[in-house]
Every structure is written in structure tokens, then in C-alpha cells.
Length: 186
Image 1: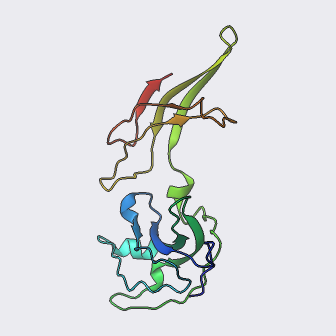
Image 2: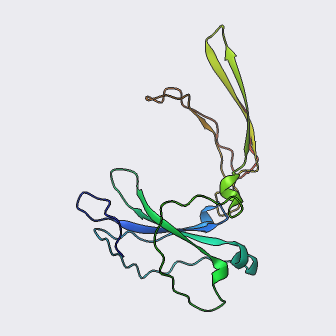
Image 3: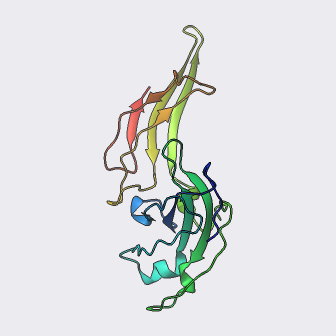
């Protein structure tokens, strides 16, 4: 209720994103439908996470983000709240009436998956004869799983900033179903 207006007409087109923390996979993210032209949305939707364990109920937190859908620009963040699952009792519905806050910083002990997303090994060499920077993308290790199967299909993009026209953009090949891809590309 009482959402911040995000559009020219003084209204918003809100939707809610749920993200179970810690966890970086798409399986941890759910989303409601968008309600148009309102500051007081009522969704009446039920979103369900399957396969939640007793351990998850002790250590996980539900991040609830409200965003404004925009057809012509990027969707805009309105606010968020977080609820530790340990506040729930088994088989009992508990209602919460939380204020939305600005994007909350990630507590390093709360969500290691957002703090540490994996590692990348690169090599850099400035070639004075050719006046070029040679970037070697060697490998990545321990990447965050982004797909429901527990893996990712990673690739690496590089840019040399500032680069308004994106002429310095390069992209490696995609490595399928791996969290430890070997690229060995220059």
C-alpha cells in the first residue's frame, strides 16, 4: 500500500520479486505478475518454493523486492524487505506488514553466494610494438550456479572503459553446464 509513484502519470506498474538467500540460482527466484497503474496493488497470488528443508528454514532469508515495470527503459527498484525463515512455525500462516526499504546491503555472513560468486584467472599484456592490450581469459572456478540443474552456461565479456560505442567489447565462447569453465582465449 502507498507505493512510491515511478511513472509520469503519478502511478506505478508494480511487481514483486522473491529471492531466497543465500542462493544464486534461478530456482531461488520467483516473480508475481505486474499490476498496472496503481500505488496500492493487491496481487492475491501464491508463489511456492519446493524442496525446502529444515536446514533451509533455519538459515535462509526471503528477500522481497518491489519493482516498477517499464516497457521503454529498465525496470526500476521501488523497495525491499527481508524475512528470515526462522521466524515461521511449521504449518502456520504468519502475516507480516513490513515497510519497504532502500536496497539493503548484503550482510557477508548472511549470503556468501552474493559476496563470492566465483573466481576468474586472466592475463594482461601491453604490447608496445602493436600498441594493444592483450587480455587472456584463462579459466573460472567455483562459479555460482545460475540454472535449476545446479550448473551455469558461463561466458566472459570484456570492455575497456570508457567506451561509449562499445568498440572494445569482446566475448568468449559459452561453456555449457559447468561451474569451472576453461576458456584459454586471448
